[in-house]
Image 1 (spheres, rainbow over the protein chains, first blue to last red):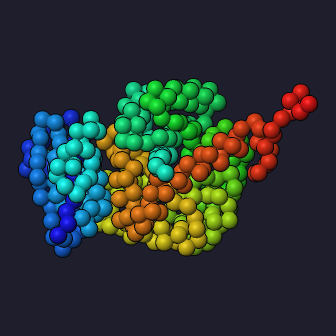
Image 2: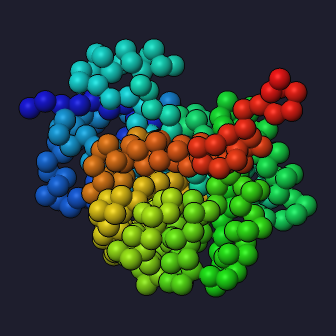
Length: 104
Length: 246
């Protein structure tokens, strides 16, 4: 199965633990697509940097736009106002990290 | 060619220029090249606000377009306001709160954007409205903010209505403009995220991208040309005059 890796930036005043971020992400996906739709996404948290508010997730490549939309609907994490933006998308983890490094 | 993105409806608190500054900086960081912010039609304040906002946009390397939101009760009032303000703003949006106003706005060439209330009973974008809009140059504006702030049944209802409206707009070739309607930085989304959200009401990817790039830019370009002192009529521009002609 082909996959896509997404680098995400959490935009908020607070810092969040990986579990809090993942709960917000799953909750956004479940609200939009239900359990059936969520099961097709094959979401995995690959990397998380609490200090920088950066996360890397892996999803099924056919579901990329669905995930992008679900991420955009996140307005709070752990009841605190937040937004999550997609920084970069890539087919391999190595290329993703290279793209993120060159964009900063 | 690389797409250029626009958000025609940023809604900072216009009395708080610091908030406006933060939102404009954020929009620039997220990849927008052009922003429109509604300005109140006050004889003393309009020019002052436009100058301030244009200055802030310039600092952030982003283009600014002035926008007027007309929230009018009767078609007659709408005509009066269009006559009075059309040449003062680059974008005119009509917030259609009654069917009569919606119909008048859809058939008037001076209206750029048709915006409807989030109340499902006051959305008047049906086939008749779309047919009128397709003959004039009005576009259907869809704000993303309610999609982010609504939860549960309210969002389900909204998505269903937007899906119907998008289908009608496509059938009658009415351009769709997706704008944020954001009132704070945290409600701003990247252009690609806005396009992804538009796929929730069944816009295909290319139409969704046009709705945040080509369609809003066409409106601004057309109106800037019309507001230029060299504009005579569509397709006719003053090239030289007076001594230049010899």
